[in-house]
Length: 364
Image (cartoon, rainbow, N blue to C red; front, top):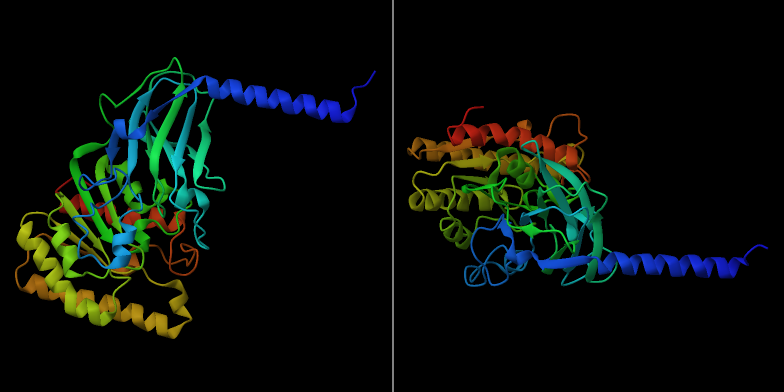
């Protein structure tokens, strides 16, 4: 005798609920804040903010707001669990026309395998601000080192990482990120991560995995305009190399008026730390929109003038990357003519990394 369809559906639903309940009952959670954090310039009020509220006094309002986004911050841990889950709280639901939900509000998990960081899976945010997601399951249960990137364009709070009840999870004994070496990247939405498909594809994160260094993402979307308050802050952030990729946001006039002071201030307070200046990426839509194209040309013209003037004045350890070397010439590296796809981010990392290595006196 066949089971009636409604009863069959009810039985299947109950089984799924029981399986989910069983799965959750076998998971224990630890506060990510008790593990090892990377990608933070200093200690902050909230562990997932990029800049402390005291340091942000005097910042422009939009920069102050963006300091609470967790771009570039990641959690390092070791676990021997066959499953990794995560719970995290978002301050708000976000919609962005040029970003995936995973990128702006999700998590991105990597594993250190044979000495290299390898992508594992993502924490995909659902509707609402309370998130509870399975990231990966059916692993072999051997002890592994993981790195979990946090959202690029949202805040985050109370992050919990879940493993099997009988598994261990700790800070790494030998972290795959060397926090004694640090690269600080200050810049625009491109630095913050627009429009990577997931947090680990922003180019500061790519640089982090390739170098094994602590890379600090100080990208402030639309708001990296070289204000004096930002120079004051950057000069207090310990770095082995500064990358200033902030030319997309200020007007040509602001670049002319602010850039030399900005760079000199950092140099005066960090006399031996190399500074890499990066022209604005070429705006693909500027090939057709003449106003955009002309503005981009003038932005790069002004920062090049500032660089040459500083070199003439004897400013040392100053390096320069031109726009034409950043994202290729096939016109396929952006999502909207301005912000980068993953292809664009890989290319810009390819262009910047050799200059960073040269600046830090490393072998190519």
